[in-house]
Structures are given as C-alpha cells and as structure tokens.
Amino acid sequence: MQLKHLALTGFLAAAAAQSTQNLTEVLSSTPELSNLTTYLKLFPELVEKLSQESNITILAPSDEAFSELLESPEGEAITANDTAAIEALLTYHVLNGAYAAADVPETATFIPTLLEDPEFTNVTGGQVVQAVRDGDNVEFTSGLMAVSTVSQADVNFTGGIVHIIDKVLTVPANLSTTAIESNLTSLGGALIRLKLLETLDTAPDLTVFAPNNEAFQKIGSAVANLTDEELTKILTYHIVNGTVAYSSSLENTTVETSPDSEVTISIKGEDVFVNSAKVVVADVLVANGVVHVIDNVLNPENSEATPDPTQSTQSPAYSDASSASDVPFTSDAPTPTGTLGGAAATGTDEDAEETNAADAKTGSMGMVALMGAGAALLMV
Image 1 (tube, rainbow, N blue to C red):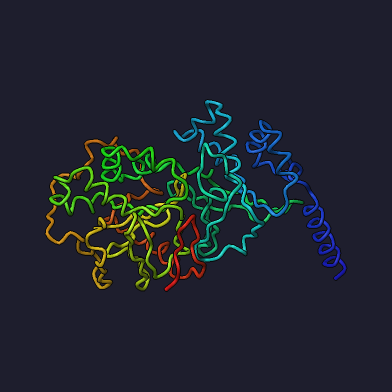
Image 2 (cartoon, rainbow, N blue to C red):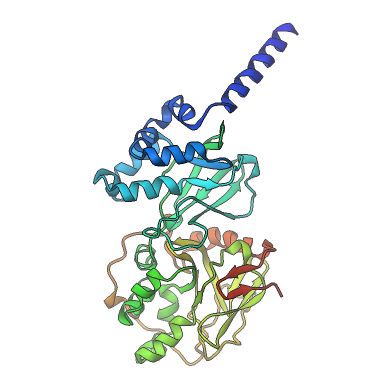
C-alpha cells in the first residue's frame, strides 16, 4: 500500500509540474515537436503572444507530420521560406478556447482559430477548424477536408492545452482554388466565364451551395444557350452573403440568397436538402466561408421544388432539361488537381456521399441561429 501511495503521490506531483510549465518549456521538452519549435523560433513575437495567451488550444503537428508536408506540393511555402504563409499556418493551429479531448463532441463543431490575417482569411472572428470525436479518435478537419487525428492529447501548459496531431492542418484556400482542387470544374468554369471568381474570392463571410459536375451535366440542355445574365441569376441564387452557415447550425428554414430570392433548407432524417438538392459533401472550408456540395443545380424560377427523401437521387429542378454528353463550362476551367479529403466531390461516389451525409446530419442538431451581416437563419 505504501508503494502505491508513493507512486500516486509521484504521479500527482508530476502532473502538477506539467500544468505549471509554460508553452516554451512544454514544446522544448517534447522531442516529437522539434520541427514545430524550430518554425516558431522564426516568429519571436508570435511565441511571445502565445506565451501570454490564456485559454487556448494548440494543435501541434508531430515531426513526422511536418516531414510528410515537406515532401508534398503543399509544403512549398515552407521550403521557399514564405514567412507570411508559415506564420498563417502556425496561427491556424491555435484554437480560441481550451478544449480537452474529452470536450470534443461526436457531432461536428466549428472552432475559431487565431488566423485572422486578411491575406489568408476573410471570415469574421477568425478562420475555423472542424472538430469531432469519431469513436476513440479526436479529429480536426481543415481546408480541402484534410483530416488530422490527435495522437497525444491533453498536454497542459500555463495558457491552455496542447494536442499533438498526425498531420499538418491545411489553411483553407479561396473559392476558385478550392473549386478546382475539388473537381467542381463546371461551377468554376461558369464563374470564370462570368468573371465572378475574383469577386467571390474576396467577399467576406459567404456560404456557397455548389452543384457538382454531375448536377450541371444532368441539365446540359438547359444551360447550353444561357446568356451571361441568365447564368449570373442562377449562380448567385446559390450564394448566401454575410453568413457562414456551417452544418452544425443549419435548421429547417428559408435563407435569402440573391435579392428577392430565397432557398429552403430542410432536414429529412439524416439528410440535408437545399430546395430539392441534396447536400452530398458538407462543410468544405474556404478562405472566406464554407461550401456545401449539392447534387442538383438550384433553379431560381422553381424555388418551390421540394425533395423526395425516399429517392437516392433527386430529380433536376429544371423539368424540361436533358443531360449532356460533356460536362458544361469545363472548357474554361483549369484541370482538376485533387479531391476533397481523398474523395471526389460527386454524387456518384458512394464513399464520399456516405461519409459526408454524416457531416450534413449534424445540421439537424444545431440549436443556435446563424447570425451574419444583415442575414440570419432562423429555426422554423
């Protein structure tokens, strides 16, 4: 019994000592964080700021995570010594609030970070990461739906908590880059044709309901001869200005998009619909908001279209349209360079749809209204 008592006393003393370590001491005493420590030394003012912060969580990539990044195209900013991009990446790994691993829920939550540099984000309150518990794992999803898993949790320091993660987070890119990386080339090509990409890339706090390529192809005859004015009306009908509507806050409601137009959000069991279009990939973070990929093109002239939850595939909102052999608008778009989290943003990829239907389901559980500049999503 005495030995057990001494062991417990020693454990408690060690725990107390750990909790009184400052950030620099914690990082320097953790061998697998040597790369992170090296990069932080490039920014003494940031280290000083973090050392003075309280109630924060640091997602600390392991040395192996940094090595993997440096061997990928995404590591170019580091190898090129782009200090602005490196500092943005580091601040994106700092969460506002101290979140122990046990505090992370099983439904998706979106946590603001210290990344507020307008060169890299245009989200009010700071760019976010998605956090969720998946069984025994705690996962954080960042740009292009890259998933980082906590490999060592709850390392305490005087200002909060450090979680060691197995992959470096991806800073969300702008809408145009994300569309191409995600193979949303019909949407990207249409926006290029209308010269709207720059406007959408720089506008703050957007929610975009983005039809996938198959959605445009299903109504190929309807979009083939559209004027720019007609196409603009359709595309702007897919955009909510002034509100970043993550799935955790979506409710049965109507949402204003373009002036004098609105879409209807409905939760049907585990699925989320926008008018009659099904959300097949939820919560793609972009530099100025969030994208939800949908399986149909919305029709501003058919705003009353409703879904049939019993059908796995919804009918197009353009009743007289027929499909095209080629994917519309892609001749203006660059070649796709990637996928979302390893899965294409399509309605035909069953793995992608099944995975992200669970993410979309979280929208039925949010009880907080979405507030934005002049816009709100109110629960019906």
